[in-house]
Length: 147
Image (cartoon, rainbow, N blue to C red; front, top):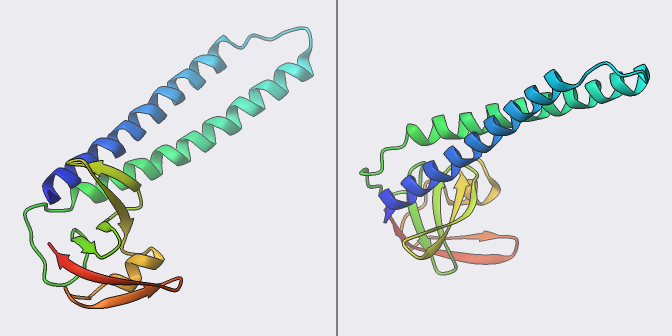
């Protein structure tokens, strides 16, 4: 289950990277096809807007590539006794994969919350073992297993 979860995370992150790269290529093409019109100010405003959008996409792409690089560092075959990066944590309320902040994914037909160890709930879980509990926003979670 954990290896399928990691594979699904890599798949989701790769899809993000590919979508952002495709969008950046479209933006580059838009800049190249933008020709100087008689309404010079309008043309410059349009180019400036495209440039701002390119910068935003570049930042999002760098972030997505960083997520992918972090996922590549995780070894799916490793088992853990305590919650740490790379662990699959089952609780009485949900299943969490401690990796990067991707949100909810489906793997093997089950919903899994992929979270960073630096997220608020990730910090609450770190170092805990099966049978231990933690509180998050007034809700008690009991860890039933750590893989």
